[in-house]
Length: 115
Length: 112
Image (cartoon, rainbow over all chains, first blue to last red; front, side, top):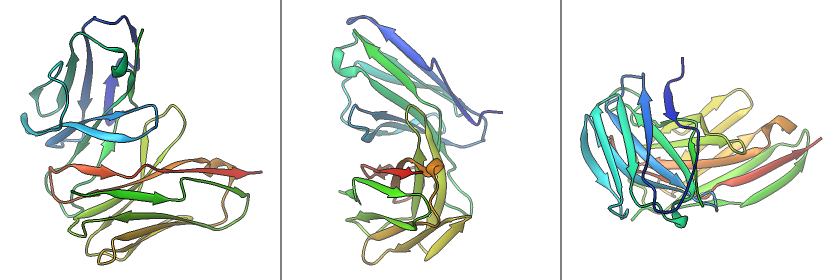
């Protein structure tokens, strides 16, 4: 059973289109994240949700809109795609309590290519 | 603002060598430090988690240490193998629900 799963794994689309990436975790975690990994492989936080509420929103264009229908799901919708949006988008989750403290579990990533 | 750096950026070693990867962070008020491995085109696999109250953690041939006061962590890999070739990233977290700040990674190549 995959703990954090993202779909689709690959996405190729034209500039100006709108696309969505879905993420689901079956770990029972309360916190979920979207990270972006650019061409230089640097991982940067985009959004974080705790129990369906937005708690971190870095300086991301408002063309990016996260949505958490429940604490096990965090989706990312991107409007009017631009060439610079091409990257790998990673979903992750973390518990909000417990003896080990915060700990990230990642999905496999969704590689977005904008043509 | 927390900043995380990793040295070296890339490392190439012959099989069998012991090696050390370094991670430094500017704000010592961390809760956890986590080491990950990323294979090309793949996601991140968690290797070790060190809580701020701990000094080190071990898993098989991997040993991670933490010196919180000096803002440093090291990942020691014993008897390296070609299968260890990957990018290794460290990340620190201040608290539950907070941002995990990542280092840029060290790209390791272990030559047969």
